[in-house]
Length: 291
Image 1 (cartoon, rainbow, N blue to C red):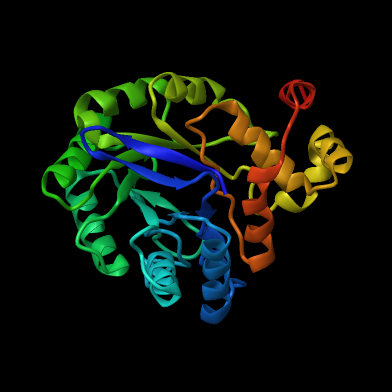
Image 2: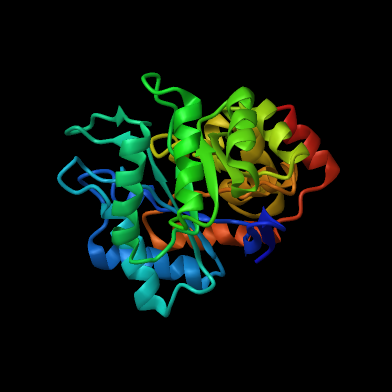
């Protein structure tokens, strides 16, 4: 497993695996894995050398079980043998008002309550990395960022980040949160590259970049070899899965990139973790970048 670094000299530098685990599939649908099966997925990730797990309080079925994914991940990491070398990154700011609905609340009051609930769900004194899940049009961005800074100043979180943010919002977050601000989590995949500018901006400023849905999303990942035909062709040439080629392509974009592929089966995250061994040539990258 290759490794990459999150943080800076002020908040500290945390070394994590170059491939993380996106834990959302363990909680988000009625067909989600059982508690035992979810534990097996997390254990498989840890056994493969994965030391970054991405979760969120809103990864659940509805508002009756907010924190389900956080509790699932925390329990699995504890049963594996401890959390000292594992960074669990969580998010707040999305709500689940019912069924498949998603709401937003970026108010400082809500984020403080959400962080406190996440601390309890994860069973920790301070969250390693706390990320604002998505901009809330009803709350000024500066107010939400100020809330993150307050959580950091209160010692409730060790580092902060944002998700689904544009360059202007990223720069405002940096200005308000200062050195506590270390990461951006935006959608990026072979079929969704409109956030390439944000990726480049993060690379230029040493900000960790977590591409979410690196395969195109839960509903489209199964057809990746078809929808991203050049990636499938390179995978066939190298004798590896299209998922490994895709993750290797992500890693080649910049040293700050840490993909967080989702998984609901052990074999999926085992395959993803092996992507750090895939060597893409300059010719491969040119083909994939232009695909």
